[in-house]
Amino acid sequence: MTQLIESYDGLPGHHLLTDSGMGRVRAGTEAVGRVLDSAAVKRVHLPDILASQALADARPLLSPDARVIPVTTAFSEQACGALPIAGICFQALSVLRGRQWSHRDLPTGCYTVGPASPPVSAGQEEDVVCVSGVLLTETPAAADAVMDDTVGKLLPGLRHEDGHWGLTAPARIWTRSGRVLAVAQGADQSALPPRLRIRYATRDSSHGTATVTFFYFSERALLELGGAL
Image (tube, rainbow, N blue to C red; front, side):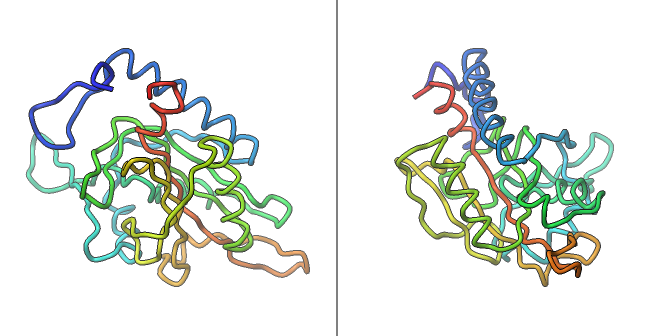
């Protein structure tokens, strides 16, 4: 692994990927993308900075001890946003909110690839590259089934544990040797701003609110999937 990661400025959690490491991450990202695409979860391109409004939308769902790293400009010490939060991809909700949905469309979702900061700091490095996204389903059980199938195809034999990953709601966390590889956690619907709640046409021609599940595949997972370990 040391041939794939270089230290950066001596700070814990800060690092760079070597050319070889980036090649492994790209291969891992493609592997994740193929499985997500088969589940109707598509890649989108989102900014590498979590805008102030998106961060404000996220606050009601974040646990009090969630770790958020602010971003400032060269011209001001006032934060203009934050690093994207690994596994809590609020920007993707705005993308999904932009169209009408039917129960026939579910499950569906989208994801982005880029840098992110984990919401829990203990033992977790910032990711130079990771996969974070949102899954829409009719029920929490349907979301669990999609994530179990996705992780099972990518990281067979791995079992999840219930834990804490930045939201007030519990998370399902897949680890290996103490390293987080994947996370899935539902959003508290009542805490979501109304403009980010996603409605869909149900089977009986009424309207329901889709279950929102955030998911994450860490840089470590991408390296593993790319053949690094």
